[in-house]
Length: 176
Ligand code: HEM
Ligand code: HEM
Image 1 (tube, protein in one colour):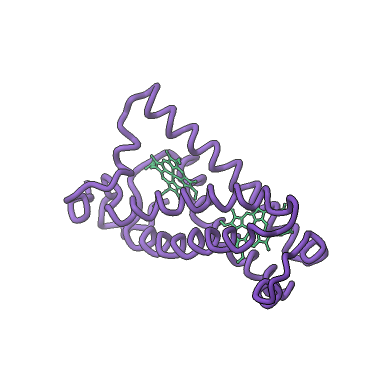
Image 2: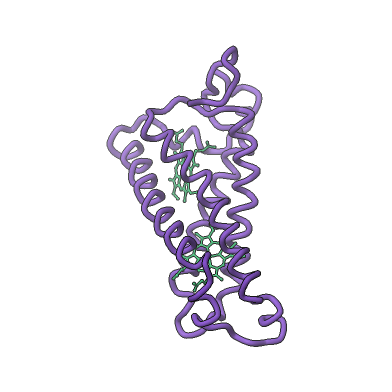
């Protein structure tokens, strides 16, 4: 499933830029999920922070996707590859549905005018259901992904997490 050209073997590790983007996206996705799940209680005062984190996750996700298509990825089993593809694509789709929600609700002018939004501003809008559903899918997949990463680290002790740590010199020397 690697996108690297057939003639070039899969890289042995992620480049420092790929690894840095991974941790930036991981932190912003977790922040967006946490702020998203408590957004409505009591008002939507956390919405600007949620939007900022979601935009970072989606834009960094686009950069990561571009690098993934250009560089391929280190070898892993089919299930892991499928989860990685979903975790690479869903934050981008989620950013798009969040932007659609905010645009359709006229939320930015309302916030600039100092009004704190409520659930009523979004509940009836078409992207509301997908935004919740995709958010839950990301939560589920990311939980499984983190559990597998910890299992590799603690039980199998195979150094899997090490290939996602930024290391000097890993950039040009990542192809096996
Ligand atoms: C990976 C990025 C994102 C994740 C994981 C995420 C996750 C979530 C979650 C879990 C909720 C709660 C949904 C509910 O209770 O119905 C939510 C609500 C919301 N998010 Fe995001 N979000 C992301 C990006 C964005 C972006 C980029 C924007 C806008 C620029 C945005 C705007 C909103 C809005 C307006 C709501 C309230 C929707 C409602 O109450 O129906 N989100 N988000
Ligand atoms: C915070 C805990 C996390 C840990 C310990 C972790 C660990 C890892 C590790 C070790 C890999 C390399 C796996 C391999 O090469 O087979 C990886 C890849 C990946 N992770 Fe995570 N991860 C975490 C959070 C997340 C989150 C929240 C996301 C959601 C966006 C995510 C998305 C991905 C993706 C898309 C890849 C493939 C990378 C690529 O193709 O550039 N990770 N992760």
